[in-house]
Image (cartoon, rainbow, N blue to C red; front, side, top):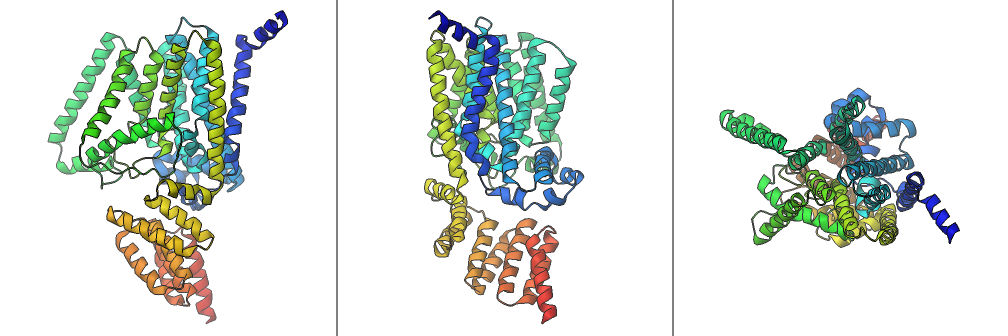
Length: 544
């Protein structure tokens, strides 16, 4: 027995835990994400990365000019391609490393917060709680979309800069002023702002934290400054010309189809859906189906009350359960850009939960650890059980990502009326020559989009491809005319023109094909297909 106690003390010292816990964590996370390393490109990956000529031949200056506030994220894709080409393994390993670093920073952030706000607990307790938070978040299957789906590196990279900025801020705020932490804070804020626009949630988080945890004098100053800012905004809205106000309004809306109120009402349910998916991570989807709310109902009021209750509960418990409060602040401020009053084309996406769910992980573990503080062995048992369960779920989700046909079939099964799910499953059906079934799905997807005032250029383009293979030129012309009548995006118009050009080319009408390809190239000089069809037409015409 004495020998066993000696071995136990040897393994569970402060220093050995700092080595042992990260190793265990790495093994679990690597196991969960092992299948992701061989996942092919999906959906936006093709246009944004695989067929993006700028990433293959462009310069850093051209990247900065093209991507602006998303420059740093696309710079990492550019580095991937310049060093290893379109090597999928390299892309996925990079995403995995970013995710792992996020977990490491989260661990140290929680350790820092626990040192400040739970001084009456042991160091081993702080280590266990911090590791539990990091493991829950790292292994949660809801995060697979931001890690496995290559283009969503923007979400995980933004989160990395957010976490490092938060760590530097709390170092300066809770411990001592240091030029090192100040420089780190400024640098990571700049990187974050140049990765994705929603990094601004960092400032919202700090504002809310200070509003809750600052002393009375500072809180009063914050409230007064906020009131002055709001009043100034109202006055400016009445003084400035209507054209300037309208320009500002349009610049903070990605789409014009939704009003801010409609989008807010919809997000009341969407955020609750995100919370549900965190606690019950089943039926995960790339394309979430959420109908736009256009009228206030009793359910909207109840949803709003649920959110308000959770926020007020967090504020009320700020001194008893400080990490719970901080977690709720991170969760709601993390959704304050994409799930509030700025209308975005896609109403809901699982990758948007990647950063906010850090807050849910902190809140849940802190409450659980507080309730079961007297049972450390049970805590360890629950942690191990949770890690094994989440590892298995994330592993299975990543395995599904490996097979596009099964993946999109699952998407269509979960959302049979979602146009994107229908379209992507149709593409997979096309790949196995099930053109009839694919055509039905594509036409249904187009009709659903039209009925809601939208039009998917890719759906129309895929329908043109099917009609071309059937040598139905009249159908191609009819579909292309509809597409070009409503589609305004230069890239999309170029894509449709190139596909129509191929239809003419494959049926022997080279002169029409040549003209269409020229027009496609004028709209988008990077259209490789249009260039290829011009070359084919030129050689065919000259030969003739």
